[in-house]
Length: 163
Image 1: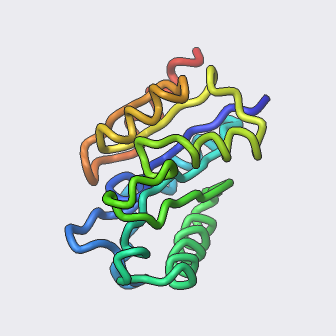
Image 2 (image 1 turned 90 degrees about the vertical axis):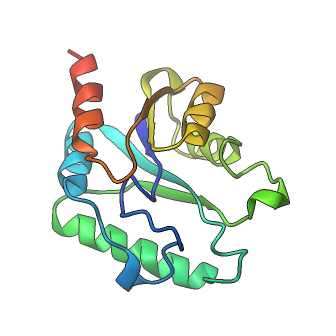
């Protein structure tokens, strides 16, 4: 079984915007993110992004445009030796009441199955209570960060817990 760190995207990996990230130009990777992800990679953690992207069903961005933004993110991180293993997103608005939108756990369940992940040895880092609720529902250890804060501190906490 693999161990993983699940990451929220907006506010954890990239700068959160009140009007949503709608283009590559608006996608700004936060400081220390490449270093933090590289540390997880070096310590044999899979890195999986679980993100709510209602921007799609709000009609502000297509699935294809979102895919291009995610490819851009992966390429930028690769330049710093950081690797994302998987990205799962929910395109639904909150009023659509789907099971994949966090705090729903459908996306996390899919990743756990596809990557043979042990939930007991895995973590979820996010900046919202919905992230923490999804973590608890899945039996993951959760770390809530401040919006747009350094990812390095929670990653160091995870790595220190192994010592």
